[in-house]
Image (cartoon, rainbow, N blue to C red; front, top):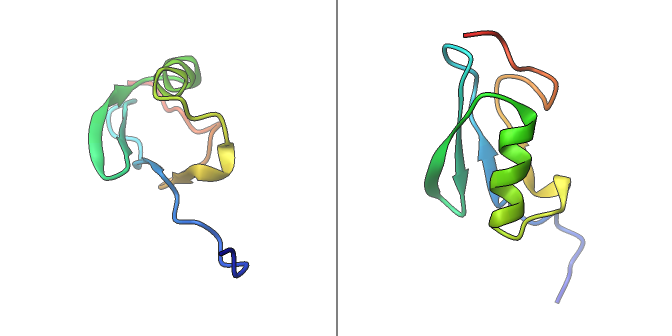
Length: 67
């Protein structure tokens, strides 16, 4: 049943630290990425293709500070 409440994000991309962002999927730590291409690859391997499932913390998808 869908009551209109948004689903909890499956993916959490944490705040950048030293140019890297830690990624969790369904509460499980799945690694660290340094750019959008790495994140896209990780999500593709996990079968996630809906950007609405991502919770960006400390900046959005264009925030990749240099290490």
